[in-house]
Length: 206
Length: 206
DNA sequence: TGACAATGTTACCGATCGGTACGTATTTTG
DNA sequence: CAAAATACGTACCGATCGGTAACATTGTCA
Image (tube, rainbow over all chains, first blue to last red; front, side):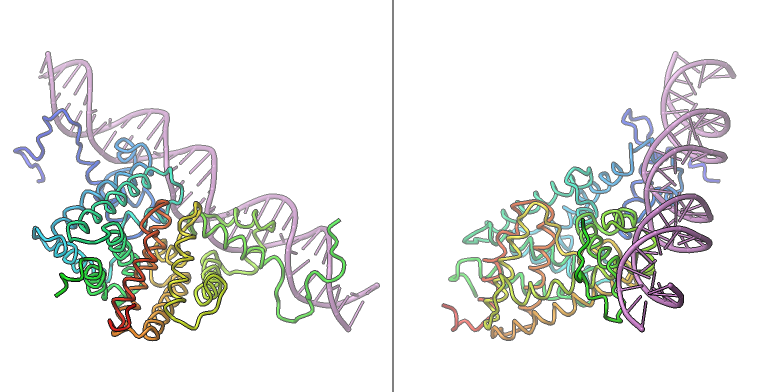
């Protein structure tokens, strides 16, 4: 019945990419985000993926490495949402950041919102040597620098200050969004506007 | 040798307050904060407290309830630090909030900083019925309201907006402080100043 | 002293944890 | 087609998890 006779996957490419590993990544992605990494056992992951445990350990040396892969996937999915919020491209840095924060605040108001998977992982694993943490910290460092660039593009007097301010704000949305619905995240857009306007040349205020 | 003959504890009060329970609370407090709640086993807690496992379960129905007690302790220790930052009392709401953020940023720059135990617990336990989460969410609700009061006392046009902005900022310090040293938290004080000054009547700016 | 409450001691429970040895399908290749 | 390689499943491991039963010991107050 499920023959898929033609060519479900190329499988001719020398780069090994079995289907089980991808199903595991997707399953881990969902469960780790929803429940937390420590809360999810490997059995639950493989059951949901429709595969078995040895398949997991053939693709990933350990659960910690699977968690690191989850971090990399999360990071990869993040950047399009940040650079092209609401699906549109922006030339105006201010508009881009505000659009991202607007979209983020909307998501954070949803019921199943669980914040940033990377920040959450850093909470779950305090040790700075855990493989998942390394990916998360690299991501946060990159985001901080990108926000500083955007702050400079907005014409901020002190791009570092504005960039850090926006970073703190965004992380605040992440963490408060999962605490309670209708939380402070719903004020985030106007707060960001205030912050940006107060950071650029006062002559340019409308 | 360690007789403590006189009166180490009153022990006359009828309210049951044995010493083992307090040692367990203190041990849990430290370990839960440093390592995370899920990461710490009950054996580790009782070993560090110098007591045995049955003593734990005589004082607390379950580990989840001990976690909830940890939340309550954390909440109780929080408010003095917030209301009297740097050990001083403040009549000026702006000065108080800025002093708290200054003190917080200093702590967040330290090596072993692990953010807010209450926010971290909400990350570890997504389910909104967990006893620890209930305490944490009540705390965050109270803090949000208190910040709104303080924002009003500062003379903010929109106290809700400024209060939420400060809340997002503070939560941002919590979470980024434990990610990497020298992070965006070190810009928090000047960001808070900007936010407050932009929220109050512009005539009052210095 | 005797009664009582709090704690310690020891051994144990079932469940679940992350991880693996080993045999079986399935596919690729000559 | 047959053989080698690859992907997958069954069954299991020791360790640790949260939690408990039963009993001995201590300290306090009357």
